Length: 387
Image 1 (cartoon, rainbow, N blue to C red):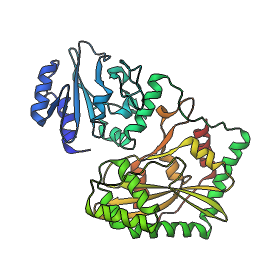
Image 2 (cartoon, rainbow, N blue to C red):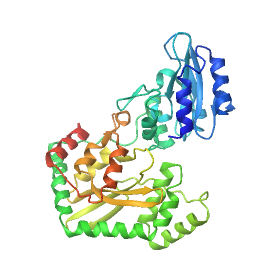
Image 3 (cartoon, helix red, strand yellow):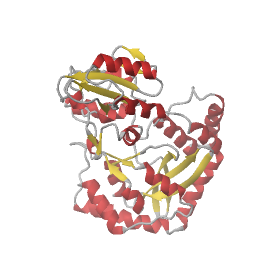
Image 4 (cartoon, helix red, strand yellow):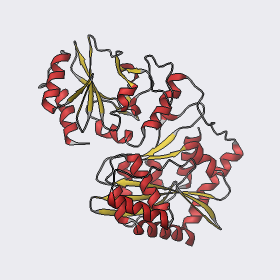
């Protein structure tokens, strides 16, 4: 996270910052960080903040409209709680950290941004991490993996009580057995020459557009950046050439690529496996936790007779591509780094997964990376996703 953001957070909870008086806190923060006022929000290039007040320690006040939050959801959005009886508190309140929309939200829909969130709607503990001044860098790394539309869909469903789209996959004993078989299938495929063919194919595609990947890696929006790099690698030569030319000339007028509905960005069929490969970029000098995959889609695909699922990680350093690895979804270290996002799970979905960024950095910095699959660990992992 930017140094200015850290200085802001440290200042607000320090003894130097005014306490117990909302007006004084507003004035001090705005002056020290040269913030621009947008009605009740103060912002700069690096963060935005809404300052709230309570006479007690509780926090149930209405904070901000969802439509106002939308303007600032791509940068850290903070809520500072000034209390008459306690010290200043800071919460990260981007959409990832909202449980629902509370106020005047009856008409909230994907095409109709309505309603406001209360202080009580801000998630206080996310993935076991407290939402406080000490943990914002870790928390914001989770938020960066999700787009505005990702979170809006979740908030619409949790707020309006509408029936979510899709259907939770029904898995019986026979289907679970088929999913277990995908573990041995992965081990067998990795030991075959076709694994090397797939890896060589992907590496060759990366080499064709390495400079363009580096240019795309500087795009701040994580979702746009990831989709463009996926397109550079998976496209045919003509489309790749066009995209490379656009990237070389103007970064501000790039084509938009939608997220694919199925599992994996790149699919190749071999006689010993139908491979699904999801391409993930990791900027190794930035903290981030990339979004992984939809759990129901993963389980449904792994129940197919020949399916094999890989993650192709591209590690990008400041000077260029650091390393690429073709990693099985069942690799022991990747399983340990896979987080099930509880707030995305519901009646019609098991939710999505996310990867811990620091583990990916370690894997990418390992020049002798080899896939290692522990069958019992992988079976327990599958059970966790199903149950």
